[in-house]
Every structure is written in structure tokens, then in C-alpha cells.
Amino acid sequence: MDNDSVINELNTVLRGELMAVESYDLFISNTDDDKIRKLFEQFRADHKEHAELLSDRIRSLGAVPGKRTGIPGMFSQIKLEFETKRKDSDEILKRAYFGEDKGVKMVEEIIKGDLDPESADLVGRILSKDREHLIAMMETMQENLSRENDRQEWKNDDRDQQYLN
Image (cartoon, rainbow, N blue to C red; front, side, top):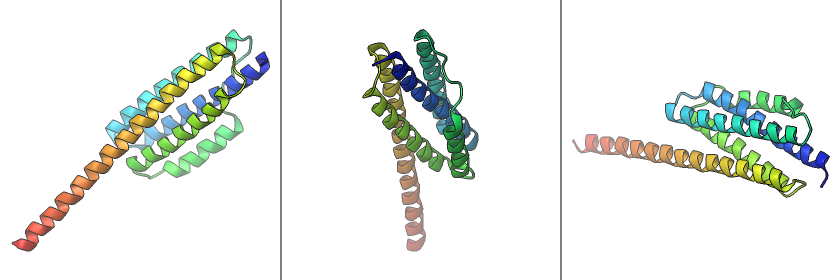
């Protein structure tokens, strides 16, 4: 494992973190659910912190960290704008989950590659936090689904009462 390989891998993870920050900016601006917005704001803050930690590590290896997501990030952002425009908060939450899951899988592949122990530890901590994001989103989706099922049952109960009267 040479230094250039480590730096390239870390810059790849950094681009993913920067894309996540941009994605959460978009999700935050398009959701109308305060609980989901607060969740997204925390995730965005986590990804900003991850980007800073990765940048610091890249600098410590004697390189300059990337500051942009590049053309793939730009196209991904355009696609995401179309996918989230005029969607309800639950749909945006699902899209955020999909994106976070994709990012986790990408980072899992990178951990298998050319990283020195210190960089592998850093990326492992980032991955752990991103997995926590997935769990929090899944729990929120389940709560929202349960709430929607309860509402549906109440509507059915009301209809039954009206029918009986």
C-alpha cells in the first residue's frame, strides 16, 4: 500500500461525504416534516465533520484534499433534485435512506482496499456513524408507517360507527 493509493481512496470517501452534505441540503429544503428536517440537519452536520476529518487526514499524508464532488457529484445532484421536487417528506426520507445506504456500501468496499491503519480506523468510524444514520431513518420510517396505519384504522372505525348509526 503506497501513500498515493491511500490518498486516492480517502479522496474518494471525501467526495462521497461532500455529496452527502449537498444531498442533505436538498432534503432539508424540500421536507415539510420538522422531525425529519432535524434528523437531516444532524446527518448533514455529521457528514461535514467527516469531510473535515478526511481533509485533515489527507493533509497529514502530504496531499491536498479535494474540495468538490466533481462531474459525477454534479450529475447526481441534478438527478436528486428531480427525484425530490414536490415529493412528500416520507418519500424524501426513503430517498435519503437509499443514498446513505449506497454511500455505506461504497465505503465498505474502500475499507477492503489500500488504507493504512490510521486511515482505516478513521473511515471505519465514519462508516459506523453512517450506519447509525440508516438505523435512525429506518426507525423514523417505521414510526411514520405505524402512525399512518393508526390513522387508517381510525378512519375505518369512524366509517363503521356511521354505518351502525
